Image (cartoon, rainbow, N blue to C red; front, side, top):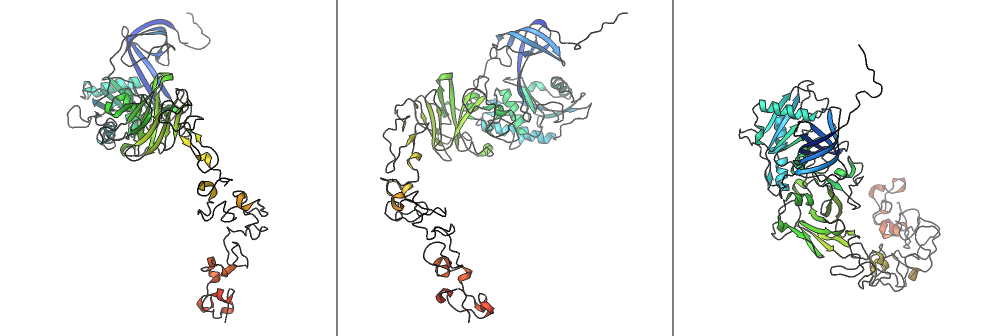
Length: 597
């Protein structure tokens, strides 16, 4: 009898060339806590029934769930999975893509408990049913609002009078994250319990939060009428909505603040799981943290939920009005989405307006009452490239495009779209363009206005806080009327150094400024330039025999001290020495504090 001793790694994965033909599954795996986002491609060989996880080549075509593909490459096996490193992928057949996602979506929610290790889903079935179907808020109501009544999730597809939540037990343990095995076992248990799974387009598996999986949810992307999704967070409704959104074909809502077409590696909201991948939390396809909210304008467009009459394609610059996405506008002519061509990438900008109402009540303030600007990545994620408050502009210098929100109210936001900003020519709708200010001036103020990135005049540079020669209080009040005395009677240029004027801000009246005590008042107006506590802006202390505010009146003689306790006579000698009777009337009439009888 002979023994073969093998040194080195035991059972090293063996690679063998294969050709597989089968139907494709594209699966999104979401870890909202750890920040992991992963898209997995599976194909089941129609000849052998074996299922492979694909590693795709860089030149692989765009792939969708349901495609029939021929894959060539090298197969290996490890950790219980078959992997296929593909060298080529050929699409043999592809399912049709629906132009719109509308109608009732029939879903069975299968709650899975484990017999071998006792792991169970903590939420009761009634609570899960309310989260998914019958509550308000619920996934059903959320989709109805987001789709303007075009998509719903009925609660009783099998017609038995009960909400379609089915709890099953499987003879397995939740310690290895064998989710595909769990899914098959749950289907078998549900069928054995009398559930007709053939009635449903979606199977939503709810696992205990204690299973040994890093993800909070996973699901097929764009699966038509043969879908599944998994969640390991039974009490977070937006995770249900998120994974079902993948079923319907939506990808993640991400950030691209530098507008380079690539998902950002960071998120402006601080330390953020997944960084830019989940960062657009104005959309439930962003991070899932149990906060209900709707979807962004690009996802509305992608799902076909906005009627054509609600969309404008801005082929010309001009002023546009956007109604909020949250409700159906009462005005039949109102637009809720403006699309603008982005020539350098052969793509589009999508502009929409959001408000904190209804399911968007908890919307982050950075999105509220602002115009959101989105593009789309090559992977299909929506990319938020900016949001605009009133007076703010977004500029795409490469394409000469600028967007400016010039106003908003509860009913709409008004935006100016400029498609020629940056060419130096004053085109229709522009106030300026680069150095071309269109004749704009600072009026009575010296200086020159500037042109912002939205081709709008910016007058901030017209004021420097100094009333220079040639400026007057009438023509340039922002420089010549001192803020401490906003009255044209106290004006730099009137020849009198007063009202907070100094040699620094009004040399015309105050001349050179000597401020020995550094209190901000020149010697010309400071009655004691050796004491920083004494100057025209100080408060009279009403004691001590000093004229702190430089008005020529000391202590109780100053009208500002009329109600000060030090200057008020009280009966019973409360303010008098030796408790003798205090004088009647004003102590100031005696010329001193505390006159006693």
